[in-house]
Image 1 (tube, rainbow, N blue to C red):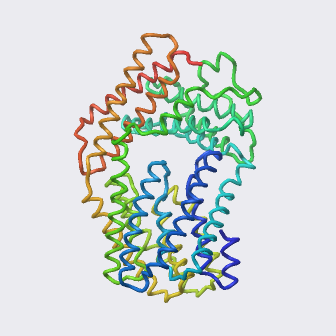
Image 2 (image 1 turned 180 degrees about the vertical axis):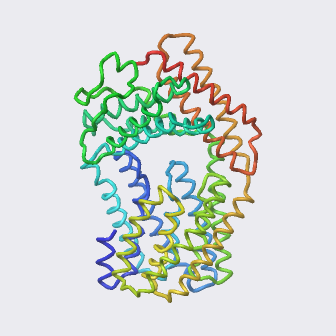
Image 3 (image 1 turned 90 degrees about the horizontal axis):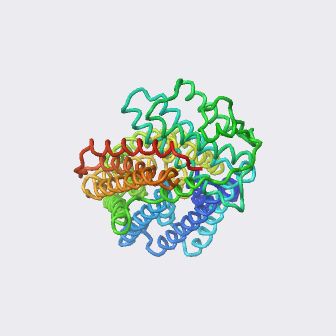
Length: 536
């Protein structure tokens, strides 16, 4: 963070300021999580980030990769192991974003920085201080807007349902319906994670819960298109989402004219002045189901292990080639390969490769422009802090634009730690990045597997089982359990995501697309029937 890096730079130790900045990358994780869970996740990330810096620094001093010899091979192998483990851990915890790449970056920078044993402890301590400062900053909003993550989740659900209501074609409607289902379940999950010891404001929680119910009602009823004015309703939902995310409002105002579910119509139009209703059982059940993959046991391990193996092999190959070619800062090639391979399937890997290539070129030009002004170390540190802020804001919205800021951050950190001619620094960065991108693509193409297809088969079977339970519930009782709806909704979301992931791999799923589509459609029709029964 700036308050740590700038004083160290002014004191003539820009090399140590780098480590405080590495710890501050903790803020790139868990941005959309409710604050209680964010606090737990970021605490673990802070420990992991500090451990990466400490282990990398100690390994670098012991192996001395900058001196050549076997030390290079040791650090490359260790970097590949860290890449694979970080990918495995981030996927298992379902942490989106750059995730494993930031952990790998921290380890690689520390392992390749010429240091002495006396530097290991200060570097690790500064990384820990940077991580702690990032933890505090990421949770500072808890004091001002404690329910903001929940509001954002519900607002996203409202916007997703609005997009579904005005979808121009059947194909667009199917995609929009999946996104809306995912968003609504995420909104319920976000609300369910609020502990009783830190309750939301009564009026705000009431509005969030009610708007989640409204989103769910419109979602499952969208198959009938029963609204007389879908366009007007969509515009109203978007306006309500804007009010929900307005930072100036402590308690969001509910707009008049919203198409409330019948259970609210019976009680009158809801107002923010009423008490907080209990969290719906659907929320808790959806939270449990949406947080778990449909695959379990050995199948789940296999699905997680193959992307981690890709990451480790790609990182090892890129780092090893960079060493053989004599590239300075050869770990840039390893990080580029890892960034390309930090994706869902081969299709998204290719997309990331293209985005990273364009982003790297633009980022290098930006770094050249900055270095051409011959800034002082203090100015460089301030620029890095600014770019880190822009990175955190942009990368969650567009990976390609994020790379435009990642590249100069890496270059400027290298210049702070070990000043070098700008032309030499940039040329090695370009060569290393291109090498890593090519290796990452080749690795994604060579390491093929059928586990994505297996995930789709299991998801299809699970969706059918959930549908059968829903049909039995409809036949046996007039009040089906809310868990039946939640289970079926989570199953249909997993089916679509599994099918999309398998479609981007070389190994075909071997399933009839019409069969998957028909199962998905019948699941939504069942959800509509279930929602027509009372469940409150």
